[in-house]
Image (cartoon, rainbow, N blue to C red; front, side, top):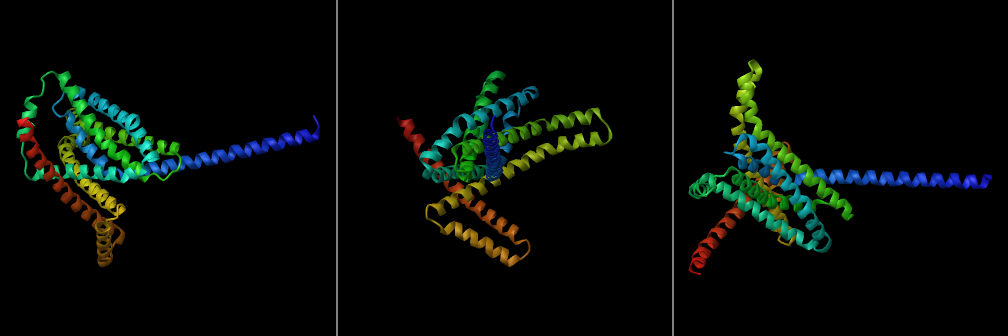
Length: 327
């Protein structure tokens, strides 16, 4: 082989290696972007995630302890199917063909969050148990049927929460490639599902672990077990309250931000100005004070919006039930 041909081969090999190196750097940069966007969008969906974590343990209350983890596993699998098989393709189609619809859909989800949060707040202030008791009385006695209905109901509820999570994630993705958008949405769906239902599994079994430690050990482990038994119900109540507050905050902020995008800028600007004014007045930790002020005002907006939606739903129900009864 001539020296010239060998030189050409060496040059070609170097060029190929340069291309591989460039492709590797591009892939690494893309993966970094995917990871960064996954973290950002997962944080953005925190309010829905907290509520999802708070709601799910209630699905296994009163069921056999031996079936708690299998039921949670079934709900988690259903949640993954919701996110990856149905919602992810729907979000990508929406992003590609109807990006204008993302803000209105987010606002509809925000209205749902405000409604759910306000309804929970009203229930906490003015409790009523009649409808719940009637529903329990009609529950079938067969444990398998109870489990089936429990799992199906949880997956239906999860679909609504997952739709809000995926839409929130989609609204925060800035990557141009549809492939990278799909990766971010899939990563968000998997991370949040594993995180939520992993935490739920720990919470559901924490009191059983505490009881075992208290019965079978002495000293620190015994005291720790007793603390778990006493502390888990309190923590679940706290988590439920935190979930309600987070729903109202996230729902209120989505509505205000959506109104701003649609041209009604005054409500969101008023909240921003209030945050800046409070931070300037207090001086100490201005960034934290600004955020907290805005979060409180967004939460209050969520309460007002949610209460109005609850009122509209009650009025619509009051009008519809007699009308349907006559038919």
